Length: 139
Image: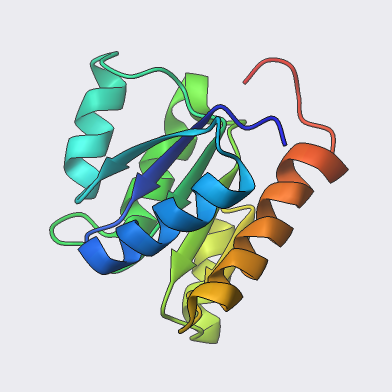
């Protein structure tokens, strides 16, 4: 799987640990850049402190700026419009799912409760984005 850099916007340390462990099994070469809040992520991106990721994973329920607002602002950023962005959250509320897609998400995933389910979910997601579908060159 050719995924070099994953940007994870997630405030839960437990979720970050599980996500990182799963990604290490699926794409050991991938670098995970993590922010506990959306504002720090956006500031770092806008100031050119980090390179553009291959994919974003964004929690909705974040301190300060919400994941939806972060997604909206990422999609307005010229250099990030084409980077896949996946919402990874506890919410399965149909209104939040719809809003995720309206703001430019390429997927809305509900966090599973067990590690094996998370591994399976991330395998499906990363396989889709980096093995199944074609991505534009200018990302």
